[in-house]
Length: 326
Image 1 (cartoon, rainbow, N blue to C red):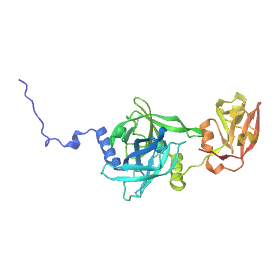
Image 2: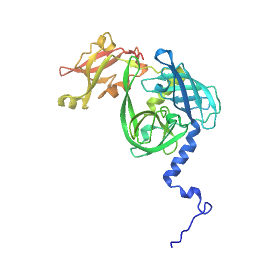
Image 3: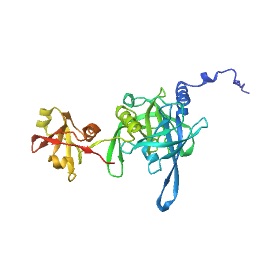
């Protein structure tokens, strides 16, 4: 008969029994869970009925500012109920939402909340540990872990009147489910590097990155309740430059104009379909993401020169962008 030796709970320290991976996930969860709220929202639907929904939010200041996904609070009356792992239940209101980045800011009158630390998604590497904390299907404070599966993904988003591409979206295999939207995606040090936004398939979750661009959006939503973008009025896509022009300009591609909206700034400047935009305001443009990045609110109403290739020649056209209506 085999002799079995049983190890009592007192003989092995619990901390020693945890491997490095588990210790990292436990530390992140303990640090960040108090900063993640379970959100409950109500919205009117067809027929005048009231439908309830849920999502997650992340506290970013001690005095009640919270970050979530714009689609979580879309169509609501602006009031949100938030609950925390310590049992607190608070009312919050929507300060501002930007559907074209899928970010929204809420504000509660509470004080002494536990704010999360915002990180920098631009420093992430594929294969790096990430932890998602949120409230999938209403199960508050749920924690899942995985890795950064890919970086630089694109996520199409739309408002009622406009559409754009959210750049540098984080792809992760950390399990995400309905209700995780608006919750935190954290790096190995517990810093929030993304706001979970979509489930694209089994083991395929997407998060809006926290970086320089989204920090500007968050700051504008906190300050002004909205984020403004400049608008040209074109639809287009990236196209390789002819070899001669590529050598002359020192770049490989530009943005081909496919459509010009009538009476838009682009139409008034004389842009035409099949024009190839290679620079705006002296900054090189090789793809739609480059052009989007340049359309900052500061350009609204300002004269800016677009370098355009037409019939093999480089033309300089003067544009005056207007505000993009969302």
